[in-house]
Length: 153
Image 1: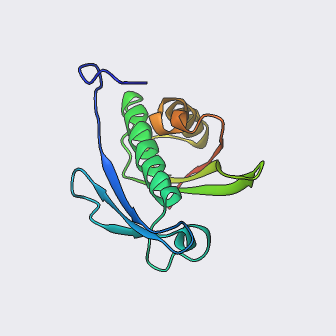
Image 2: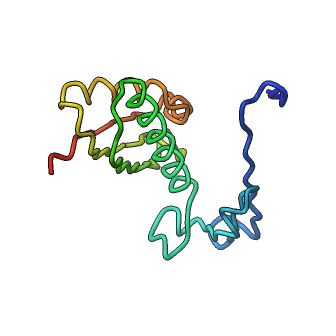
Image 3: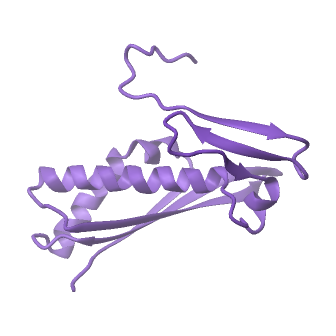
């Protein structure tokens, strides 16, 4: 499928250079913006201990956490609720399914300081954000969970 670049509201690029076979090989990931610069990746770092390297799942988790935080900030603003702070993390899981590595889930954890909302109103806005986030929709078919709570401190 080719996307018509005239209709896309945003396009971003990342590139990986890989050398060698999967088990012993290694690569680097660089983003078109320059924000990610030659991040090292290996199969061992992906499936065992990261050892200071990243993985596609970690990058997907970063994308999901940042996307969801933006969707939540948008929906909160539409409800005239300004967050003092949103703390969103995502844990993306890679599992073997039918003999193939598969991203099966993304678990979002949200802690928010939004003084003007009670728990019920916050939960409603979180549900709206979950339906809005484009990265959540990208993960369609994977189990996505959201553990969201207001910080009452």
